[in-house]
Image (cartoon, rainbow, N blue to C red; front, side, top):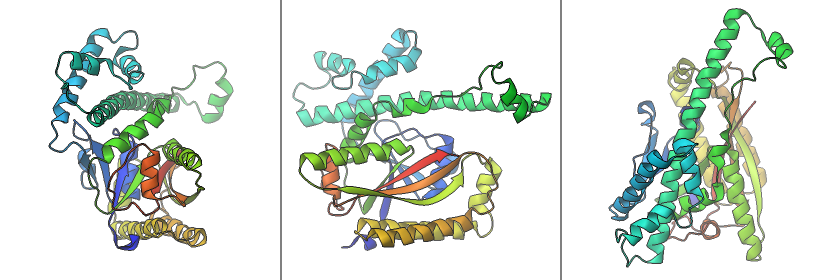
Length: 360
């Protein structure tokens, strides 16, 4: 069976908590997206549930109850002993215990985790605990980011009311309090461990069709490619990567503009056509099509997307969709370099990574 006959399945990797902007951007770029679920259901806005769904990895597993028990212990401990950083600070500290989490050890000593648990099960529990804690950490970070965004909008509204224009703001920068801004680096904290843990759990369930991995931050694809490159060097294999720009949309659209982009007369048909062309491109890439042809396809895709979003007259940050491939490396090789193994049907194909870049 060739890649061209397979169904594509898109998976957000390795984050399990997404911002409202992430949901909007992905819902435009992709026809449907899976978000990994371990213990808690994926948090998906009501409006996005036609395109997003949770992907449970511990289906019918008694490990889920053990993991949930450990997580509740962490939450209870954090509420009492959060320290100066509160729960967010406590979660940061817990990351540093990812090799042998304190509460997991306590559960073992109490006999709750099962003395006869094999090493593979223990690794699964560690990975699951790590990702669930990372999800809670990210949710707190996104709450803070949302608060900064609201305050920033209020600050701009105040400037508009009192008549402070951009030139006045620049001239007064040395004397005014700096504009509020949130540091997004928390979402990248311990990224290699996040990726390794995500793939370990992802490999627990058989995946139909061709999986396509989607990172909401450019660093995700970069980190995965670096892990692949390191694995190739250690095994004496050659590899090279190539990246293709596929489309661009404004990030800071209002709700009305966003709904218009995906629902206005003719837009759903244009969007569906773009998604089909994207899937054809991904299947060609997974099947090993050469760079020149992929470049031609990506240019055609960008042109088609310009027609869809040609009237998005919104200034400010934009989100770009990139596709990255690592040539001469199979899906099975990639899984091994990321520390997991499994009977992936797509084992012989080239792995495809999609990334979202946000900026001016």
